[in-house]
Image 1: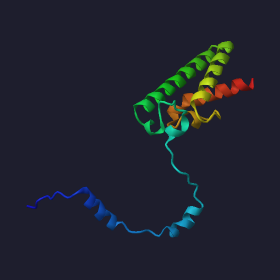
Image 2: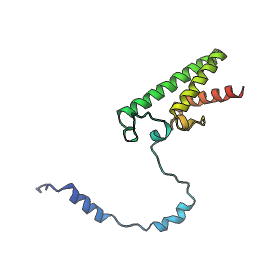
Image 3: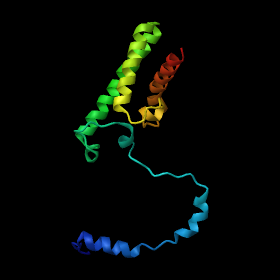
Length: 144
């Protein structure tokens, strides 16, 4: 039966470094030439205008999560109000809600181009369905 030795983690890390072989990256240059690539960013960082009490380093902590939850709830509330007023054809209230939404949107979101990506980083079509409908109603109301 063998005994297990206590080995410092730093020694294990040093041994692993020695195992890693240096790769000649130039051989991949031709293949990467035609690829569309971009730097992955934290979507939470790029969608919202965070308040001063949520610095960049606290985005994934409690304050940042609370702020994002508040934004999602507000977005859902605007969506519900706009859908309701559109459904019952209450145009005056619909215009008021859209005007309130636009103020909220410009104050709290970094990109204000009325695109789905400016409001949501989710890739789930079910989650984005209401936001897409909201944006279409707003676009249609601006045309008329």
